[in-house]
Each structure stands twice: as structure tokens, then as C-alpha cells.
View: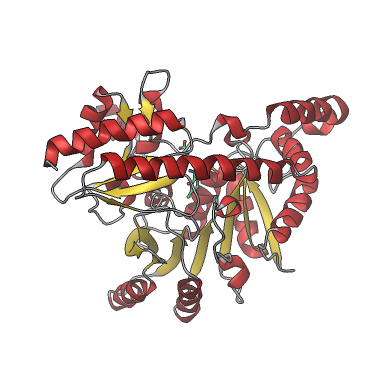
Length: 407
Ligand code: PMP
Ligand code: G9A
């Protein structure tokens, strides 16, 4: 999907002409209501939604506190929720400094958009992982970011390459702004950054005077113990903007996310948000505050951890069984995705219509690469499909790939 035509050329702002569709969102439209096994969008398993408890909370909030819960609320967020949220974060190992503040956003996607809006001028350099979350790339791209990426290996972002890219950007006389990273159970790769790399990344931020955006939807439900201290906690110089969300640990439909950072950053985001959506849903924030206070989020996290670990294992076993030996893939300790590398020369975007014809969808990997490449990669989601669908979906994909490459 793109915006085009004579009228659009006449009227659309320069900025809007370069907007790209999110392949994740487009695939969601394509697969919705159709008999297709979707290994595409990162949807939580609906089994993890605590329906009865949320219904009870929602009822009580509306009946007993409806005057506030159904009302407009401050742009920064409902004061009570922000307080509960700070406690929740602290108790989960995310350091909240005395000079920090938190803003509630409409999912962490809005936080990404607001960050792009307030920090990125056209041509400013944003350093990213290759691959990285494509909807973050789109948000930065919208404000004219110039990307430089560093590849991932089993220990996360190659910070030695990051350093090279930073030096290169300096030599080119560019303005350096941000490092964007998803350190734990990365999207799309599933990889988790080692402690050593985390420290190196922060040293680089300090040395080259950069802000760090730590996008962290997945660290609360890793399936295996990992040394995954948040950058926000390791950071001693207030450079990290920490983003979180309830989407994977309670419900994405509530559309509640947050940014925790030094208060000057939060004020800038607040001003930007005033003209985007005034504030995030008051009702959702009242519900979220209660859910956190009652331990419902922690309970959901425990449930999600068990379900997703099993599904990940089924996907790993199925890949082993059905994909040809010429393919390789990541083995994530958390998150919702496995990233697969097919033999060079295979184009997963070109192959997608055939896969859909056979009743299975995935996200082609190329859009996760800011500087091109990755045509032979694909992202496979294991949280949403049932175990049977995972096996069948991977079987069908394996057959298709074998037809293309032999093996
Ligand atoms: N960042 C990352 C890394 C994600 O994976 C997602 C959702 N898949 C988001 C941000 C946005 O999530 P939400 O807006 O639902 O919080
Ligand atoms: O539905 C969305 O756009 C959120 C999911 C993101 C993803 O699949 O990475």
C-alpha cells in the first residue's frame, strides 16, 4: 500500500509522501478472517488474556470510579497509574532515578513515534540493529532519519561494528542522535544482548554523546534465566529512554505503553503528545493500575511464559524436521519470534504469495533491515498460532522452500 496519484502529489506534505506501509499491519489485514495459518503478526495468544478478572476490574472501575475513569485525563497519564507503574518497574529491576519521569503512551508504538518527532531532524543519524523492528524504522523514517546499522549475532548487536559505524558517521560530518535497540528477545531475531555488549553500548553512547532508546516489550517473560539487566539500570548518565508496554504482558487492546526517562525528555514527549492524542485511554489506565496492583500482570506473565516456551519448542522441533539443512534459524530465550535465514538467492517477499496460497503467512525479513539486505530471511511468530498450526505451517513452508532449493 502506498499513497499516490495526482491529488496526493498536489496536497500531501513531503513527509507523508515517503510513508511506507508496515508489512506487519498489511499482513494482518490480509490474514484476518481467512483460513490461513498466520506466523506473521506478533499477536499474543488470547489464552493469556485474563478475561474474567479484567471484566471484574473494568466493571468496578466504571461503576465505582466512572467519574474519573470515563473522563479526560492528563497528557502524562493518570497520576495513580504512573505511581503504580513506577513501583512495578522498580520491582522488576528497572531503575527509576529521582530525576526520572514517566509518560503513558498509546502502546510503545506511540512512544517511538513521539521520540522520532522530538529528536529526529532530517539527516540525523539513528543507529539500529540489523535486523530491527520495522515499525520503529518507519517512525524514524517519517522524520527523515539517516540509518546506520550494526548486525546481530548470538550476543545481540555487534557493538564493535556499531563503534565503526559511529566513527564513520562522524567522519561524514553527520549529526548523531540516537541508538535504538531491543536488547532482550529482540524483534525480529529473538536474540538477547550479552551483558558485556550492553556495557559497551552504554560506553559508546557516553563517548559519542548519544541517547539510547531501549525498547523492551519482552524482558518480563523470558523462558529461561538470562542475564538481561536493562540498559536503563546499567546506565549511570541518564542517556537511556526506556520503553515498555502492556501489550504482551496483559493485553494489546488496552493500548497502554510508557516511556521512562530523564524528566526533560518526558516533558518534550508530553508536549508532542498533546497534539497527537491529548492522552491515552483513561479507562485503560484505571484498569491497568488495578491489574498491576492486584498482581494480575505478574500472573499473566507467568502464564505467557509457560505457553510461549512450549510453542517455541514446537516451532524449533518443526523447523528441525521440515526445513532443509541449507536453512538456519535463531533459538530465542524469549519474545514471540524465530528468525530464519534461507539459502542466498531465495527471495522471501517474492515467495510470500505462494505461501499464502498454501495457507500460511510469515513476515518477509527484508523490511527489518534499515540499509537493505535480508531478502532471504523470514520472521516466524510462535505466540499466536496453536501448536498444531505451528507444526502444519512450518511443514507447508518447509515443503515450499524445498521445492525452491531442493534438499
Ligand atoms: N516495539 C517492539 C520491539 C515491538 O515488538 C512492538 C510490538 N510488537 C512494539 C514496539 C509496539 O507495541 P505496542 O504499541 O503494542 O506497545
Ligand atoms: O500488530 C502489530 O502491528 C503489533 C505487532 C508487531 C509485530 O508483529 O512485531
